[in-house]
Every structure is written in C-alpha cells, then in structure tokens.
Amino acid sequence: VAATFKRTGSLIDTIEALRGKGRSLELLDLVPPGPMDEFIADNEVLDPTSPDAMFEGFTERGLKKSWHLGRNWMKHHRPFGRKPS
Image 1: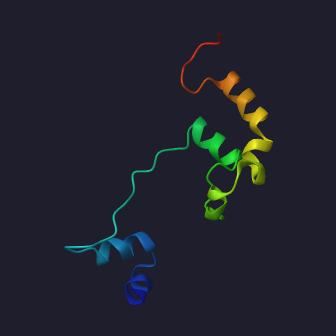
Image 2: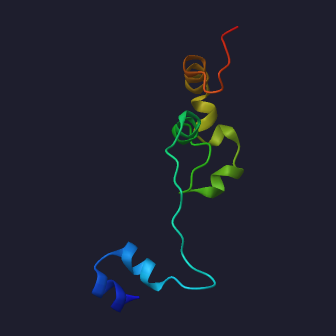
C-alpha cells in the first residue's frame, strides 16, 4: 500500500490500483445532509463521539434540554411537508 501510494501520490489512485476480486474498497455514493440530519446533529440525538450516551436518559444529554428549540425548528421548516394546524 505504501509503495503504491508513494508511486501514485493519491489515495484514490492507490485504492483503484489495489482493487481486485473479492473484498475491496468501493466508492460511497454520498448524499448531502438534509434538514432532519441537521436536527439530529444539533440536538445530539446520535453522537458518534460518545455512542454510550445513546443509552443515557434524555435528561443527561442535550435532547431534552433543547427540545423546545427542536420543536420550534420543526414548526418553521416542516421537513415532512405537513401543514400547520
């Protein structure tokens, strides 16, 4: 891997050069984050830096503390296309 990277100077070219049959790295088809992804990130619903927090009570992390902010955000952005009642 190091020799191929030194020769190509590119991580992508190194991956492409070393791809073969069987298990291999493949390019991901990435989708830009949407409004719900931003809501989850802003309210610490799923935090990859501390996955154990997922098992803590809501009072011990940011979701309950910022619930009103999230609820107001949902009212204004309508990510699911619902109309105000």
